[in-house]
Image 1 (tube, helix red, strand yellow):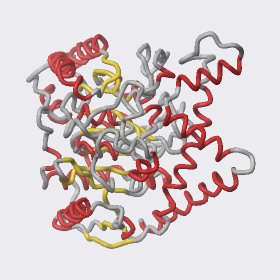
Image 2: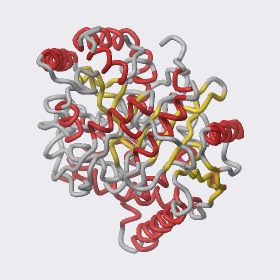
Image 3: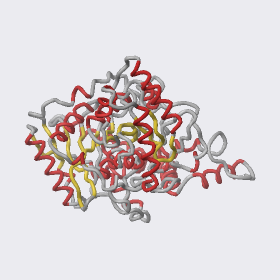
Image 4: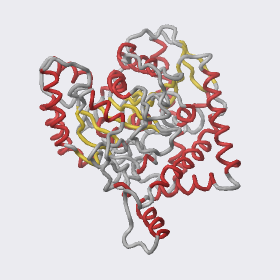
Amino acid sequence: MHHMTLAEIARGLADKKFSSEELTKALLARIAQLDPQLNSFISLTEELALSQAKAADARRANGESGALLGAPIAHKDLFCTQGIRTSCGSKMLDNFKAPYDATVVAKLAAAGTVTLGKTNMDEFAMGSANESSHYGPVKNPWNLEHVPGGSSGGSAAAVAARLLPAATATDTGGSIRQPAAFTNLTGLKPTYGRVSRWGMIAYASSLDQGGPLARTAEDCAILLQGMAGFDPNDSTSIDEPVPDYSASLNGSLQGLRIGVPKEYFSAGLDPRIAELVHNSVKALEKLGAVIKEISLPNMQHAIPAYYVIAPAEASSNLSRFDGVRFGYRCENPENLIDLYKRSRGEGFGAEVQRRIMVGAYALSAGYYDAYYLKAQKIRRLVKNDFMAAFNEVDIILGPTTPNPAWKLGAKNSDPVAEYLEDVYTITANLAGLPGLSMPAGFVDGLPVGVQLLAPYFQEGRLLNVAHQYQLNTDWHTRTPTGF
């Protein structure tokens, strides 16, 4: 049963081929057997999962139906889950049990999903490798010596290893799309504001967005359907009708205008990945798409702008973790200042401390205009580039990452080298656009992803293109050896 997609699970449950309880028990046993190799989970919720599975079976017996009713998933461990540890991959929140459910968790629970557990992640979502977690690094099921990508590496590794069919994730600068590329999955970052951030512990509030990680575009459509929608609790949530994403999957690509930015194919891109991207372009051309070269001239400024804005917002958001109200508190503080200093120094890991320091510096008196304000102006230029491009094309296509997954520890001594791996993904977050990564081949046995970007609220268009591509390719069906 572990090889089934969400769509196949929905059909199997509807046809009474198996129950949600049977499926849940099988997957929990598989996690217990295989996850020690991967370290993809921080917490398992067996008792909750079995009770939700029984409830879903009872709802189906009473005549209810739904694609997510009885479907097993997991949540990235920054979505608050009532009464369950929500750690953000940090020692700071190791003892924190959320008193409420995040909107995403509540919506998916109402749709009948079964929560198997909380997945491992880079601490406070800060990283591109899933090596900064307090609970140890996550390993890539395609090669256990390599990273799965971050910060949603736990969700990605668990889905790629067939421990479960799909999982929630978040994307601040590529943290859904990059792990999807590294583990041969489909990952979607929705338009900023499409999915509620209420109860999703913040890294950088103007960039964070929740979304689905799954094996196929069809499954991403199903999971996004349950996640998306307006939330009055979230002031950044957009009151925009949610379309039927599954209904848009089978549209023709005839005449679809696909833009390929010339800036994507610079010296920093592995030529083998460039070849796979061109192969994807040819495959979509055969399906009727029209290809056009475009330019995104301000892309070169995106990484420095992002790594000013995101740490600045992080330094502000993480100031609430002070050892006073909740989370980690140092032992025997001498006074209030000592409590603050030692609680934060002992509770936060090195990468989080680094970004807090960068952000505090960028916001400090005398440097705000020179760094933060200038970065926001660059952000506007990046957005303007996309708006101009989307006057000419319907979709933008390129590589998701410049390189395949690197070995564990390979970039630990050079944080900037790791930051540069986000070069193709961060622009979508700066502009607030939806982006999707889909499997497109392999380099040295490691998966490679192709990224699609679309105008605001055109997630359906991304899913349509990816689904049609997946009907005509088999990359997404490949399974890592041993799983």
